[in-house]
Amino acid sequence: MRLILLGPPGAGKGTQAQLLMKRYGIPQLSTGDMLRASVKAGTSLGVEVKSIMESGALVPDDLIVRLISDRLCDSDCLNGFILDGFPRTEAQATSLDQMLSDRGISLDCVVSITVDQRALVDRIVGRFTCKSCGIGYHETLNRPRVEGVCDACGGKEFFRRDDDKAETVMARLTAYIQQTAPIIPYYKEKGRFLEVNGMGEIEVVQELIVNDLEGRSK
Ligand code: AP5
Image (tube, rainbow, N blue to C red):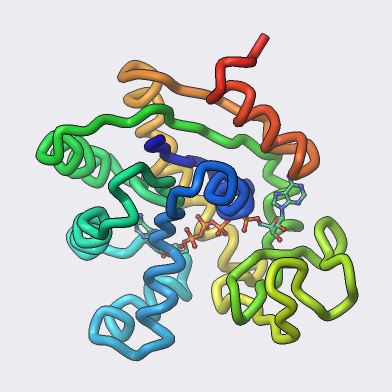
């Protein structure tokens, strides 16, 4: 299964990708996570993108395309993958087409998650993440079952992202509206496209996606 998850910041792409990854045994390719790992490791890429990410703007296309192109060569992508946060511009979508055609493969579905703008800001400013396994939580909407302990790995340390501040969220939202939303019509015309209402509970949104992917939609 080869999927793209599209949606504004805070729509739930990462949350849904983690669940789909478990269900289908395919990796989540999150460009945001890859970039944050580079920043944390202090690589030259990390140094280059740190301030861009903190401002809420998009990282240059050539850097992102190289990142994904390299990652798609890994053996765990042979049976499929979930692209989370890529592509985000027309140039990235065009490059992805080329990467897929070079490998003789195609996408199974593009899933676009929609959420009310006010909810996006609330979701982002309340988000925190497990330091050891990267699972995301929320102060009020999605707390760990046991206070202070990660449901997935038992980790006890959590962090908040540097770009999860109310003022940066608006810049990220603007980048989405101006640069990413324009690629939606392209994917709508191109092939299987699913628009999902992301305002429901996490499990409900997952069910909508899975039902469609597995041909159980009404
Ligand atoms: P990235 O890391 O991709 O961030 P984003 O797109 O802004 O998306 P988020 O991770 O904030 O949100 P999400 O949709 O994954 O929501 P989540 O599931 O966590 O990118 C960060 C930066 O990196 C960019 O700004 C850019 O600088 C750079 N970058 C990355 N990719 C790039 C690219 N391709 N090109 C150029 N630059 C790039 O959910 C959010 C919260 O809500 C969580 O707390 C969660 O628990 C909660 N939640 C989720 N679903 C629900 C639900 N249904 N109900 C209630 N709560 C929910």
